[in-house]
Image (cartoon, rainbow, N blue to C red; front, side, top):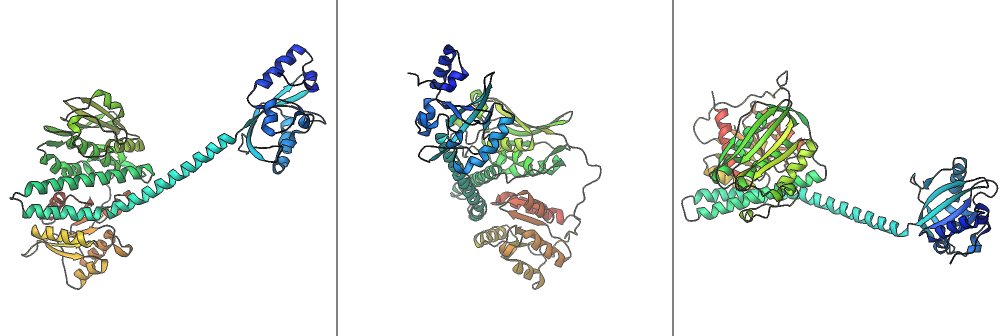
Length: 528
């Protein structure tokens, strides 16, 4: 049933039929509706309100009719409301109040306040100018927004805690993992031709998988929090490809796979630290899922674009899985892969880093035949002038008899002892130092002339390995070959280490790779 007709509506709609249509329409609306005088002495006077307006604000009809709309505005907002009302009267137009960020509140009859949204719609004819104000109670929405804000804040806090934990894990977990890996290498050499050798090989594979999982989790976390900022420049692929060939040679050989990383003199426009992350994940993934045959890296060019293909003869990927292949934690439901370790983040990292660098990664695969992952990126330009290289004299004289001397700077006792044991088994003479003072003491007091320096990057009392090595170089007057080990592969740390180190290896270091790098550096330093 319609409410009694207000005189104001009779004035606005002298035609009874039109009045009936308007009254029915306004009464059927789910929101509160007010018709308010828009000009003259009575501007702001309520001429009409529907039943929902009475329910929402808790008034009787005769308590609001012909009263000012300000009666429904909280006292604290009335001055601001009057200013807005005057401005609107000069230029009436359809608009949302609060669109500029003003929080709107309504005041009920009992004095309680609640959030509202108001739509103003001016209406003018020959008789009078009015504004139709549609008011919506935003209490439920505001509560939902507050809950979402609290949930978001909790999620941000939880993510910060996770990031701090993983940052600590990046160092604290790598140290004992390095000890385990080094001791495994010692035991593998001691029991090389015994019945225990296969079990020690399984231990090595388990440690290797633990290292890959830890590195993947740390990398994806750094990408999520935006801790990795790309430094894009033109550089030669020769800065990247030889390292990959050395890094994955052992993994491929252990599965009797042919690893063919083709040489290329091409320059690329990318980040010299992040591009290897992409290729490392793709090559590692290819080796993991290839039982026999080969894994090949091929470089192609076309106009201004360069393509790096990772081609394997592995199990291939069913077509229905290709669309989700780069999703985090997604692993193909393939019985031939069920036994493979991993958490399904490697390809997600590839996709994320490619997006960060504005590169493109695509895949072609045939089940049972193998896969081709292709990274597309811009070609770089050959620099007009050769890059300046830090010139330091290199120790080139062979030691007169005796074992080659290695100065090992490492503050973790477990890592230091296990590494010393391994290197001594390999025939090296090891001099350990846990601090800057101990390292300098070996040189200044005992006259040590190391044939190679191996140092951790982060050391006690705020010292860095590159700083300590630089001091030793200054004392010696020449630079022995230097290997820097680090559990933090942030760009800024690696760039600092590059200034003094001939080789930078992430912790936990692959022992076989470490020994190969040592042999390579010794061979270079002893070359006439």
